Image (cartoon, rainbow, N blue to C red; front, side, top):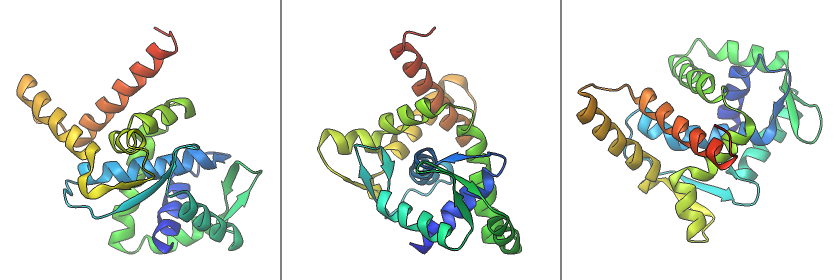
Amino acid sequence: MEKMRYMLSLFIFALKEEIKIPVNTLFRYVYIYSVSIDYLQDLSNSKEEVIIDKNIGIGDYSILHEALQSLNETRMINMIDAVNIESTESLQDYIQGLLSTERVKHDLNNITYFVGIVSNYSEDVILSIFYNEPNVLYATNRNENVIKLTNNKLYDLLKKFEIIANNECGKDLDRYDVFTTWIDFVFEEYLQGKGIE
């Protein structure tokens, strides 16, 4: 749970400009980040397992919920209502104090950059991205509730896309460009599904 508490703290810190943070959206950010970071940092050997709840569409629900409750109990966040939270000065001070270590600085930079990308999309699009994420599709099609990231299907999909794009364009695309192109593709599919041009 400490790993999730740490990760949630960094995400909430990165979202500090938000007056209220929807809990399920926060959890979806954490899940999408967890499965995409292997590709974004070129880590092809993740051994993580992620528990998903197909009904509410978030990753590691019970662990994330416990970590969120722990942050609430230590007054690092305030629960505005049953579905929204806000950051407190305690959390801001806590993260500021940790920024003297390189690992925290590195993790926060990655998360802040990631949040900058995905926060441009609406909650409906984030939910669509979650449900179109290849690991979730594979698990739900097989009626499984455990995603094994030792065979991270998003990593494989993004690697294939990167190779095709680089061969066709004659460029070396940045990994974040490849990732955002996948998100844009899901976004376009979402708009088409809604009948929006």
